[in-house]
Length: 445
Image (cartoon, rainbow, N blue to C red):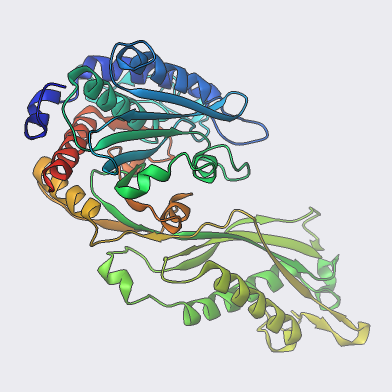
């Protein structure tokens, strides 16, 4: 192995645009079959994995052309993970880049200004790279693939093993055990615990030091369906749901106010609970509905327990049910109890199984300090931030003993959005940040 670690930056160089864009174009070209929204849309991550392997195998031990150790791991047909290792010389010294997922959220071409399923450019300078997955997360797949390719070509003498893990099934949690969760369960990532793990799936080139938990909920109200001209004989399930939800929100914000640590972690918002969807069985405009459901989510900063919040919401609903007479109503004949008919409205709250816990990164870890220094060096400033958006799986990694730090080089404003794009210059800076992190860790005695 030729070049010493202090010369890593010079040896590896910057992100080479042509092979990066060529690979990204192939990946975006597969996105119609990478959309993750089962059962209608089941991604085939093997399509991306094969493109990654095509780039890396020429500098791998598989072909004898280089030192990279490349392994494809599948738990179900057509849906692979890829683990790539550039081996270092000192056992136990590891830096890893994980979380570059090979699935995408759905895109409706009729709502986009350009084709979401092919890579296109916005101008002659070709700075803006457009298409579903450019920011989240195929741009990062292409970026880290190029990093590993360059290490395999240059063969620098590193004490640290550099490991990249490209994963399946990040965008949907209804199917489990086939992505990073499966890799952790099988012990395939255990060696990553001895060094910082950088989860590359956020945005805006700054360290994301904290993400929120997420609790999906459904509040069903049952009343009495009746003619709208005889409102005094009905229990309006929509009104019951609205008034109950207001009471639930009031209690939630009293019990889970802004936490003192949120300022330290620079959260833009505290924990929140809000409705996002209404449904009811249907009926005419002259019918007071006897049943309806309002659904939404809770975004919870990681300083509160999701299980405790679920318990408290159930307590709120039970108490409201027991004291419906005390719940404010709307207008002179609106009511949620009909004593003459021995009839009471009823509330039921349920929670989806895909509850996610938030994560607070360790601000004292070697990995965090290296990320901050590299960001300041390459980007020009470092401004760690936190969001109550949720990243699946990383809290579970932290709980398993991994030193998880998060970063990303797409654009938050296009995350899961129509007309998604990233900037080549941002990805190029991400490449330099990764090289700087490796160099800093190499300098540690």
